[in-house]
Length: 148
Figure 1 (spheres, rainbow, N blue to C red):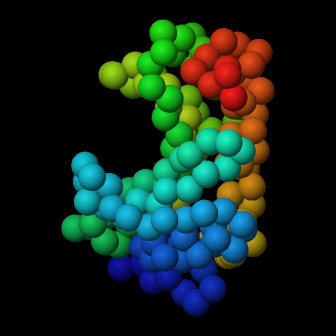
Figure 2: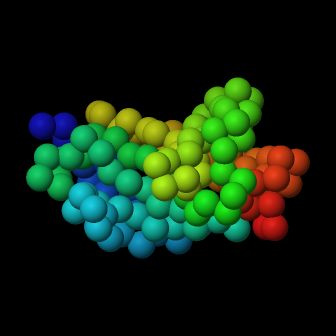
Figure 3: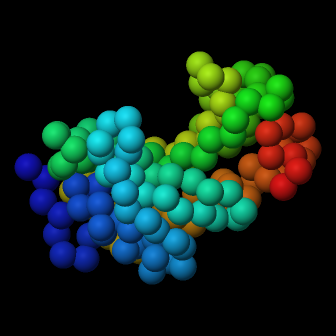
């Protein structure tokens, strides 16, 4: 199985991800997903609460990737057209409307072999940047967070 070397950030060692978030100045509460039982981290940046979900897990352990995710409940403005406009302009994240009409903004990262702390700090910075841009995007395109 994939080993998380000392000093590396790995999905198969969720505490390393929580520690990296905290080192970057973010809150990081390590819990478990209610639906899958896989590890989950709750945090916040740029005025938005978000979660980090763990994927590729075997029996809720040995995960190989993560997804940063913020979800906005349906307020009548969550449309595929809004999500597609975001997706055409942004490279490091994707937006989609789910079956419950919630608008989800996500950023997927694989950690196979581990990521050096500096590289993961850049991942966190990109995610925080995407959240900041989402606020601006919703002000310019009426959406679920226009009031933020």
